[in-house]
Every structure is written in structure tokens, then in C-alpha cells.
Image (cartoon, rainbow, N blue to C red; front, side):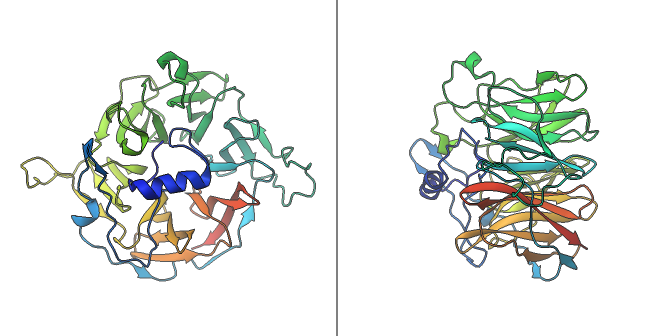
Length: 377
């Protein structure tokens, strides 16, 4: 799963630090980014004879001026939601905001769990030494495979996730993911995509369709660090997926807004808006270029992002010094605020359906755990 920016040396160094590979995703993946205070443009051109990479998008997109200001009136201290000697992360809210879906390697492989926010465990003193008996957490379904990136459909009746359960069909020994859907009413699991390349990062559009990232359009013989993402739209009735964006844009962290409008992170670390219903300009070679509206400046190379439409609020990570920090971006006022979350790396921010909570993963005693803060806006 290629969440990392295409800076080969930095990417490989980061993979060694967190101990995971691109194709075996961790709860901790995050793009390698520059510090927010660094005004230099990131050069993401790959120096490799096998491929000539596209020019960095930051060189061609207009600059954006954001104001550092209060985005929220107040926010609470981080509240730890999971405990134990396992990695717990990549959490998402259910549509009613009362539960969380997340992945954990408690059982040795990544599995999908559900946490009830109405029955919080406020500390680990009541748990066993491993912390694995948390009473408000249950495994959603059991399998011997890696099941990851869980997210509810808008009506809450089903859960989309990524799994390697059919990798043997492609005679692959390494991780290879396709997208599946779990039906809560009868516990049935159905495969939604069928590709020998990784399909991952599903985001529901509605109760009939979803968008997802795929590496199916990258040459199969490329090494992992050269594989690029395309963005597709898939359907729960197994219709063939439709390509929305190709590998030229190498999108990551996609967000569906509405009516054909998308946010995504470019490989230069900029959050952009793309409206498929707006006419696209001609590029200098006579082809058609996407009409991209940048939402973050070149100096704020962002990581993973989340969006709440009602509040027009973006939660994102960016690196300050040697730590990934949490930022809130108000699209109405084009202002941002650094949210203090304490020590530890921040990963995978998510906003609650009502925009009053931010969920994220943070490292505690060598394991990532879920935390949340509550906002007053």
C-alpha cells in the first residue's frame, strides 16, 4: 500500500524504522514529509532509469496563503481509547458516531474490531497484563487473514475493508489486497474488487458505491517504491470499477466531498480539490490537465487527511521537527491551527460525523493506540 511519498532514500529509511513493508500495511503508515517551516519545494522526481516520473505538482500549482489562527474555541486533552501490547489504529467512526471501527494485530494478523464509545475504559488498571480483554471492544468477524482499513457504509449496515484472503488465487507469497464488504445482518463477506495488484484505501460515496486507490495501472515489474496510485470508483453490486484519476497524479488519502468533487493528496504533499464537473484546461503538450485547486501551501507538506463537510473542517498531519503533528484547517476562513496532542507520533486523523471529535493513533510504550479529542467550534 503506497502511502509514502516518492522520495526513495527517505521512504526506505522510514520503512526500516517502523518495521513494515509497502505491501504489508501497518497501522502507522504516513507519508514522509518536510517540516511545515521548511519553504523548500520537495523534489519527488524518481532518479531511476526504469521510469521518468512526472514533474512535482508543487511546481505548477498556485500558492495558497493560510493564516495561523484559532479554528476551534477549545479542545480537550487527548483521551486514550485502546490499551495493550498490540498496535491498534486506522480507526473510523460509525455513521451514528457512537462506535469506532479499527484494525488491530492482537491475534498476530490484522483483524477488524469495533469499540463502543458508550462504554469507555478510562484506564488500563482493570485490564490484564496484555490489555487484550478490553470489555468495550469486540472482534467484528474472525478470519486467519489480514483484514484492514475498515469503514462503514453511510447507512451503517455494512463494512468495507481490505483483505489479502484471496492472494493465493494470484500465486503471490507477499501481501496483496482486494476490497471486500461485510454485511452485519448475516455476517456474509463479498469481494468487491478483483486485481492482482493492490486495491486499498476504500472510502464510501453512498450506499451503492465507493472510491478506492489501486496500483493496477503501474507496471507489474516495477519495484514497490516506484508503484503509483490510480483512483477508482467501485460498486457494491460488482459492476466494473471506473477510473477517476490515473497514475500521472499518483493520488493518496482521497476524500469524497459530493457531486463529483474530491480532495486528495498529491505526491508533492499538497492537499488539492478536484471537481470532475468543471472543465479542465489544456496542458502545454496539447493534452487535458486536471483543474486542481490547492488547499494547502507548498511549505505545509501534508500527510493523511480527513474532512467533515458540515463544518468544512479538514484534519491533517504534517511534520514539525521529528514529529508528526495534528492540524485543523478551516476551509471557510483559510486558517489553520496546531492541535497539541502530547508526545508521540500522530497517525491517521479522522473527524466524527458531527465534527466535534478527532480520532487519531499515537504511539504509547512502543505500540500505537487510539486517542480522541473533543472540539468546541
